Image 1: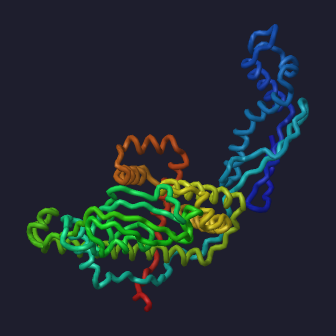
Image 2 (image 1 turned 90 degrees about the vertical axis):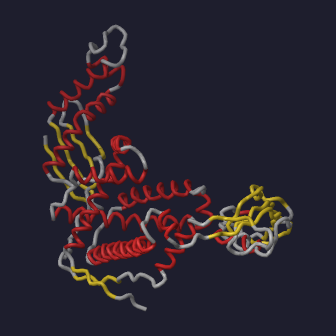
Length: 433
């Protein structure tokens, strides 16, 4: 058997494979026997029909296909191993010349990982804008904590204000026609944190319990339902109840309810959290800055097929996220335009491929590998995040090779990123005005 390789453009390697006639005939005969064992041929027991009878029954091409199916996997594996090909797709047969009794000639092609030069990636000096904790961060955190512990009391002696909860009935109309699903009964609305159309919640302010009134709003121009986009609407309102927020006092009792020994311990916990948040932000900024610096000097020719596969993967992820949010891809197309979506996903695909290629190359150069302990730690992390048993996480990884590959790549990426931060000088600078 002979195997000759030719490098083509777009990171394609062409394999010219030639089997001696004897080996090809043997594979053909064995294929004929295998086929005869699974079909009924009148006058013969399964597996006992001669080759010429099997040929008449199923056709020579079927036998040739079966023979190629048995020959090629080992040949491809041998060619890839002996030539140290870094393949990213399964080899595909381009053509073959299979005449029984003559040498078998096959042409196949396989995509390989793009080759590129990686310049300096260690001992760089990288400027990173340091995150500064805002002056009001502590007060806001404390107020958020008090807000989460707040209770609500019914009020009857005043109209609704911006910080109240209200219970309302509402019916929406556009051009005198009732809006489908545009109504609600005894609906509780937080005026300050409403996700209704802009202007809806604000117009509830100043109205009292038992009052009936209309409010006028306009649907956004990019509203997901085309027939309502940009349309003026009227909502008929009946206000049933007003509740005011009552915050707890910041005292020892409140601190102990949250599990702290004292107010001072609670305050320290908030400050520690803000400091850890700063450190996390700074670390993330450093990781991005170092990686961007390395990528500046990297030029990679990425084949269109590789970009297309990654883009399709990103599009599927995007459609899944839309579905989880109650939207369809068609609605996104109507809002943004398909050309814009495709351009954005293509740019993201190229960026993701480039990042992965660089990470894998650094990992190879520095002998950075994923260990069993790394995978166990990641599984524990996933177990905590999803709130499931470890066995369920392992089961999902075992059943889904794509998911396992993604998790493995994530682990490798994290290890390489940590290596880059440790082996480059990070110079934190004040954020420019």
